[in-house]
Image (cartoon, rainbow, N blue to C red; front, side, top):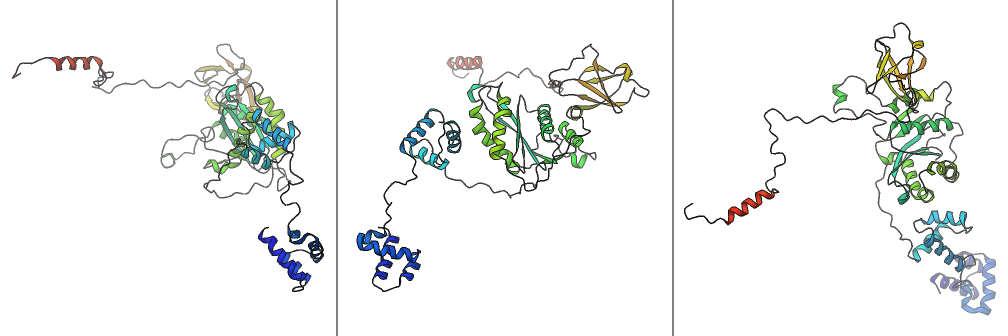
Length: 430
C-alpha cells in the first residue's frame, strides 16, 4: 500500500467515526462526496483494501499484445535494423498496418538491446529567429555531400536542397557536382514550379560570394565583383543573404539530417534517385512536414518578361574583333552576318553560355546564336571550363638543384661507406 493510499484510508476512517464530515474527507482526498459514500459502503465488505485500485498489479486493458511486440522486434531485426524508432513506427503503419507509437517502439528496442538511449548533451545556444510570415519570403539553400546510396553506388553524391522558411516546403535534386551550373539548373526548376522568392539564404561558398584578395576593402576602391549565381539573382530581383554559421540556416541543415536518415533507406540506384525524389519522397515530405504559413499572402512572384535561359547561364563580356568574332576560353566564335551592324567592331557585347551548352550573344536587345569558327554549332552537353595550368618552378639566380634528391640519412650507399670506413684498422698516430 502506498503512502497516498494510507492517507486516503486515514481520511475514510475519520469520516466513518464521525471525526470529520464526508465533505471534508472528500476535499482532503480530492474526490467527490458521492465517491466517499461509495467507498464507505465498500469498506464494510472489503476492509482496508478499498483504497487500493482494483487494477493495481494487473496489465492495462490498452496494452499491446505480446505477439505484436514479438512480431515488431522480428521485423526490426530483419528489415529495419538501421532505422530509428520514429521512422520504424511510420514504416510499420504504412507497410505492415501495425499501429504502434514511436515511444513504444523505442522502449521495446531498448529492452531488446536494439537501441541505445542517448543522454542529451549541452549544445551551443544561438539566438532564435522567428519564421517568415508568408511562403516565398525566404528560401534556405544548401548542398549536402553524402553517400546517399551507401555501398550501392558512388561514395559521394550531391543533393541540392531548397526549403521554404515559412512552410518547410522542400525542393531538391541530385546533381553530379556542386557547381554553379548545377545549382542554376536546380534554381530553374524551382522557379518554374513556384515562382521567384523574395530572398535566398545560403552559406558563403565560392559560387555565391567571390574569393577576393586580402585587404581589398581598403586597397581597392571599386565595387566587389559578383559570381555567376550572384549576377543571376540580381537580374531575377532576388535578395541574397549570407549565413555566418551553419546554425544560422539551421532549417535546411536539420532537413539534410532527416534526409540522410530517411531518404537513404529508399534509394537503390543512381538512375532512379531523382525519379524517386520527385515522384515519391518530396510529396510525402511536403505532406508530412509542411505547415501552414502565418500569413496566407503569397510571397512568390511571377516570371513574366524574364528569360530564364538567359539569366541562368554563364555570362561574360567580350570585345568584338575586326572579323566580327569573339573569344571564349581560347576558341573563336563567329557572329552571323545578318546580325552585323554599324559600330559593332570594337564594341563589347554580352556572351552567354547556356546550360544546354549553346553559345549566344546579346547585341542590343537581340539574342544571336554564335557558331564556332571550327564549324561546330551543336550545343555542348557540358559547360566548358578552362584548364588550370600551374606555373613552372624556376630557381632563383645562383640556386643549384643538384642536391634536390640527395639525403644523407636515407642514402644507402653513404651508410655502406661509413660502415666500411669504421672497419678499417688505422695505424697509431694517423
